[in-house]
Length: 400
Image (cartoon, rainbow, N blue to C red; front, side, top):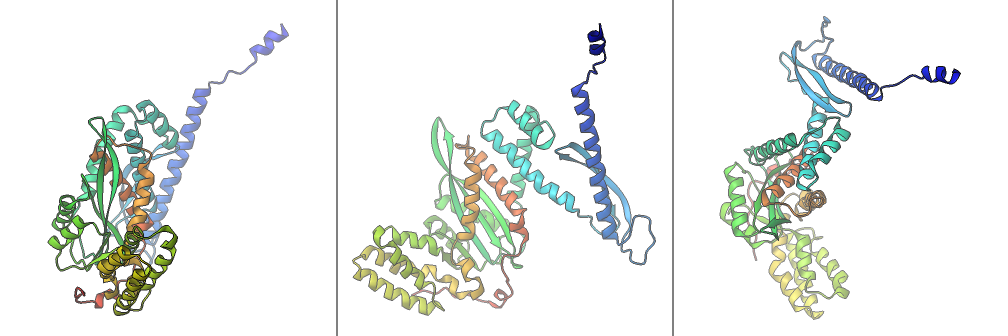
């Protein structure tokens, strides 16, 4: 009897209800905190609190607009302040935009990697507090494709003195066969020294047709003020540059040139030859580099490496274009390494997909990653001091 009474006193807890109410409390707390932070940012921009009279005030409120934000606590509603004269740019919203880009990219990766829709729903709820249904995943991907296309083909504004070009080869499925698909990418350094992704396109391969179409589209979208193109020596690319930008010089990537030479050198002598080649690009000016190259060519012949000597003789001047530009820029424009770092990041992110269902999906995921990179420190930090370049009025293509 006493046992029955004890059992009757046991409190029954509705675990689901507790979780729901607890989640609601957390969500409300997050919502209140974020809105207070937005208000504080608005007060700081105005120079005074909302209703305070102050001689330091520089603007006043003009109401607010609402927007939602997905957080780990769930979806919250933000009241974003509007100011009468100053644009309200919130650090909170800025972080949201970068996070939103990352979320979109993750959804696309899961979709392309063949993750089941049910699994996508579970993953999105665990990560972001919001469950994304099958229909929403499909709709989001289409909307994302449209958004990426707009960003990828946007007008190019302002001058870009330095432009880097490269391509990456990925795998796609075609009629039950695995085939290559090339994604061609360009980024530039603008007149203020900041980097910007200029575009990306799908090409069947890195040939004249692919590069010609891409470079023509860059010019059509407004790419102007270019003083130097930097890339590896892909003949289709070089010929296209000469066709669409005949007045702009081209810098052949010194690192890729070294690799071309090494392909004709025994492994036991690569280290010695590498030191010889680096000595050419360590000289104080172009004339000194050419003189050093002539000595290197003779030494390669003496080492019984005639093909390597011929490679240096025929190509070394293409790697010395950078010497006509400010010395402070040499390290950044002598090679295509700045682009190679981006390509490494793209390879890392696309590895999870494996073989893409088609070329367009490959282009979309690569461009999503480029868009994400551009929104981070890469695009917001000054990369070069361009004040020295402003004095460079004319560049004569050096030959011989």
